[in-house]
Image (cartoon, rainbow, N blue to C red):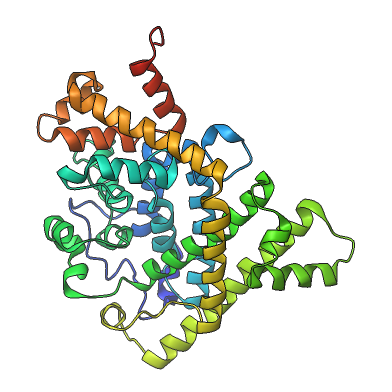
Length: 377
């Protein structure tokens, strides 16, 4: 078997310096440890459910908009490309990218906010922590352990942020949040790839839906820059082709800037191992000029798309579904499916949160109807 890890940069994570798994297993044949992690994530039930979980638009609103699944695939593609060019571990990067949203609730951030409010008295809810909980505890596939038994580096990298109280509870996997160490470069790449993907794909979906117009988007400097370039090169282009070429140009510009700036920081720092990376300032990032342009795009999306009255109406309904489901189950946990009711013996609110967070948009709406509408089974 060709060992691509021999060509990794000295500061990349490889199977030779992994801290291993919680439950020891024989090394895989024909693939690396991180390829095994990626494959386990892809074959998980939580990953399949991402197909019917909202990115911005509720899943029932149309088949052309991004879901958590398509978003995760797009993040993985961007992140792998960046990692390859920086000499990092593509398989670890891909595994983290595919797993980063496994713990997301139905209805996107509206669902998370609602569930977090409900869980406020019981430790709160954060989808990033839930993603780790999914791979560590909730997946039930293997005879010898709960979860997916992923490598330490994959688990640590899934934790994008973590409060001190939660870090203290999680132990070693969250230790870097207590010792002020940076994530490995593969995790830093995934974080920025996530931002590149959702900013640009949200503006694409916003334009496709008609909630934002091309004229509005053209007021954003980064979008206008690439829109003008496309029109100059292709004077007769219009419609979907014009939007796609513009968004494509923005993504490429962001990736190229990220690569150049990250290479500059790495060359300046000269890390020789993973430990150097974790003690250094953040090494993966945009140039100051591109960071400002990207921030302006984010501000525009927040005002024009995420706060659009139609999105806010859908958000209101989504929050209500999640809140009412939570309170119904808190009122009588016996209404939970058996496997979650059994788990509720240890922690009723957390078992309810696990159940709701694992729902797809469509399942949450159907479950809400079953519990609130007479005659619906």
